Structures are given as C-alpha cells and as structure tokens.
Length: 412
Ligand SMILES: *[C@@H]1O[C@H](CO)[C@@H](O)[C@H](O)[C@H]1NC(C)=O
Ligand SMILES: *[C@@H]1O[C@H](CO)[C@@H](O)[C@H](O)[C@H]1NC(C)=O
Ligand SMILES: *[C@@H]1O[C@H](CO)[C@@H](O)[C@H](O)[C@H]1NC(C)=O
Image (cartoon, rainbow, N blue to C red; front, side, top):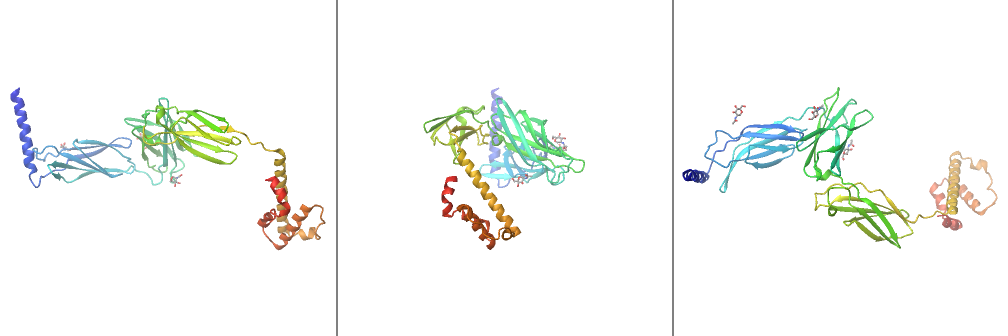
C-alpha cells in the first residue's frame, strides 16, 4: 500500500517537473480539438462537443479549451471539459469556434481554431412573427404565460403560427390561441406552466408557422424571467378622510415574495382640478393632506424591489377608489351655460350661412330697430364683419366687449 502511494506521488512529482521543464520552452506545439460538432438539443439551445487531438504530446497536462460564439451574439469562455451547452436564438443560424489553450507559468500557448456552424432554418423574408412580447404572472403556485405578436408583413393569409416555450428541460406547445380576422393565431395563453415562480433563469419562446403559399420563417426569443414577470396588483386598498388628512392602506399583492420585497406607486387624481400626483412608497400605508372639498380617485400598483430580485414589470393598477366631495352642479348655472352655448352656436351658423350665400343684405336691407341692447350689439357687429369678410376669431373676441362682461362672468 505504502509503496503504491509512493509510486503515485513519484508519478505526480515527475509530471510536475516535466510540465515545468516544458514551460521553459519558447514554443509548445498545441493541436486544435477534433470532431467539433454543434447539435440542437432544445428550443434556443445547442450542445457543443469536441475531442482532444490524439496528436497532442501526452506529457502536456492541464489543457483548456477556449470556446468562441461568433453568431448570433459574440461571446467567449474557457472550459476544461469537452462539451458545453449554449442558450442562443437559432432562427438566424449559429456558429462557433474552438481552440486548445495552455497556461504555463507566465506564458500562454494556443492552437489554431476549428469552427462549426448551423444553417438558419429556411423561410421567406418577412413571414416570421414580429414584436413578440411575453408576460408571466403568478397566482399562488401557478405561473401563467401570455404572449402576443404581430403577423409578418409578407405572411400569406393562410399562414398559421404555432408557439412553443421551453423552460429548462420542459417544452410545451400553446393550446389556447387568440386569432385575427383571417383566423391566424396572434396571441397565446398558458394558464399554467412549469416556469420557476421566483422568476429566475431564462425562458425560450419559439414561434414557427405553416402556409401553402410560402415557407414561414420561425422566430426564437429568449426572455429573462425577472424582466417579464408581472406581479399582481395590491389588494384590499382602503382610504379614509379625517378633516383634511387622507389615509390610504393596502396589502401586498398575492405573491410568493414577502411583504418587504415590494415597492408601490400611488396615483392620486384630483378630479375637480384635473391634476394627478404619483408617489413612490415602500410602506403599506400613506397619509397626506388634501383639499376635502375635492373629489379624488386613487389607484396603486406594485413591483418587486431590487433587493429581492432584478427589476421587473409594474403590476396592473388596482381598481380606482374614490374619496372626497362630489362637486354639486347648480342647475341654474348649467341651464345658463347650455342656453349661452346654443345662442352662440346659432349666431355662428347664421354668420357662416350668410357669408357663403351673400343673402344677408337681401333678407335684411335695413338694420333692424333695437328691441334689446344685447341683440343689437351682436347683430350690428356681425353685420359689419360679414360685410368686411372678417374671420370667426373676431366674432369670439367680441364676447370680451365690456357690455357683455357681467353676463360672461356669471356663466363661466
Ligand atoms: C472523429 O470522427 C471520426 C469519424 O466519425 C472517427 O473515426 C474518429 O475516431 C473521431 N476521433 C476521435 C478523436 O474521437
Ligand atoms: C414593432 O415594433 C416596432 C418598434 O417598437 C414598431 O416600430 C413597429 O411598428 C412594430 N410593428 C408592428 C407590426 O406593430
Ligand atoms: C415548430 O416547432 C416545433 C418545435 O420545435 C416542431 O415540433 C414543429 O414541427 C414545427 N412546426 C413547423 C410547421 O415547422
């Protein structure tokens, strides 16, 4: 036993000495790996595999490989293994290169590159779906997925699209589509998926299609789960007014994230003044001073704070709730405004009809006698303007005539 251990140690020792000896050399010949292959193992997922080169001097240990993805996105990394999985969209093809490398003391040696590629799947340009967007939502333990897209501009009318998603090793086809007027699928809904409810990892979505008239190009998209996860809106939103102090309270959305993980946005809209205020809050209640004679509408939405997860989407707004006084509308004021508006409208119409037909002078050759001061002012002025061909704007400016100031104020 002891002898075996000693032999083993001796072997390691000699290998280290040999490696050190080799490192002293200016040049070490490294051969690139062989039999480099790329295999599609799932939606937007490939397996890269290669073998060590048998011509390589077996005394050289600790060889590494450098993998370089050339398309669709440039990326590179090192590994000591002879296979590697890569997640990438594949609708535009995929290509990668690999070389053998050796770190030896302070020197670095590398072999030449070997490359392999996957051709892009066939399809006519402009036939794939465009603007694919997906959103996930969690209700208790179930993560639902909703995706929408637009039909490609060159897709024939008989095109049908099919959507698949992959999360880790699970792939599933959509069963519930929404269709456009040509019966083409344009949205998909998975009420329940196997997606991680903490919103970690990537989601691969693939939309391909078929048509009798053209080959439909597929589309792949990879989504960061945290970026497409939409939390539910806050629940049990209540508000009360005491004097001029408004207090709003709510509970965290239905979610697996604890209470401390949420950020809220409160929208307070003053209906009378048509003015809204948006406030960012971390607590579950908020108080502020308001004008209690105004009516307000309040709504609130939530998002997961970055301390618990990378930033994602805001939830939908909660249902609006209303507080404050309804501004009573006085009947007389209302009637007066309607009356005034009608009169203005009639006068304006008359003015335009007369202008276009040039019948004013035929119908009313003399200026009518004054039966009311206001009417007289109106008519004479319009008469003048119609003759001189002035514009509508000046009729309106006439309303500012001091003779009408009192009437004006009481109406508006
Ligand atoms: C590479 O592939 C060829 C043909 O498939 C095979 O004969 C050869 O043994 C492989 N080389 C290695 C190192 O596995
Ligand atoms: C897709 O999105 C782009 C950019 O957001 C937009 O310009 C384009 O109009 C959208 N296409 C369709 C069909 O809506
Ligand atoms: C669409 O993609 C799925 C999953 O890769 C595949 O099973 C199916 O045959 C494809 N359909 C068409 C029409 O290309």
